[in-house]
Length: 253
Image (cartoon, rainbow, N blue to C red; front, side, top):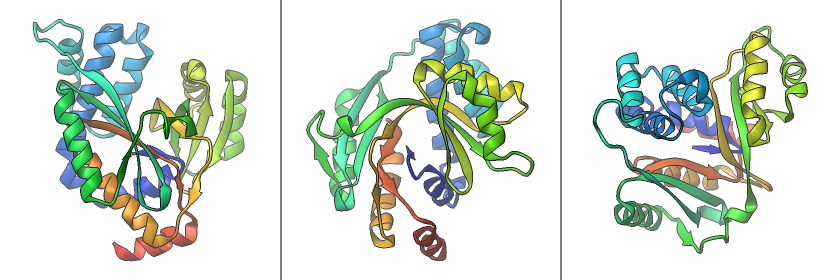
């Protein structure tokens, strides 16, 4: 799940992380396969593959699984990888906008499963283009807060590399860039000795909706249902969760 309230959402999802580890691994492996198919198996010449591998390693995907996925995607193992990306649009509770990115080998299955999950969990599907205009494609680098690394340190590292802004989300920072500057900003962080969790192109909302605890619970329930689907790779939303609302959600767990 990605979105303006990523850090609150991530905290929420960590409570159910273990039961979804296998499914998470499968999605990360799929990312690696697609990146290798598009840009080849050589990490030094394929920054998208570098980011996919980095994300998988941060989630403890075994190296053998990663290596096998690279070979499969690049066609070095004799196996065929054929996925297509499909974007669905919809709304969660109280008009929270959703972009649902699928990576699938069966478009009809993906469409049916997304529609069912939306209908059963209080969501509604939207016409193509009616939600997407609220989002812009951006490079997003996620950094967990650690002692000794401040927002100013991150800004100093990435500013000359074309970063647009650094956002503080409570538990971590997000560096926002133009997608074309993502690799430069990531490299600048590495050269400054600043560790990051993930680096990828995402859809970032232009306007956000601050939600109360009840709405947040409904939104998270829908996101969880969508995230359970094998074909759903990413979910982008425009909800904003305040610290006060997050505290209420923490009491639920």
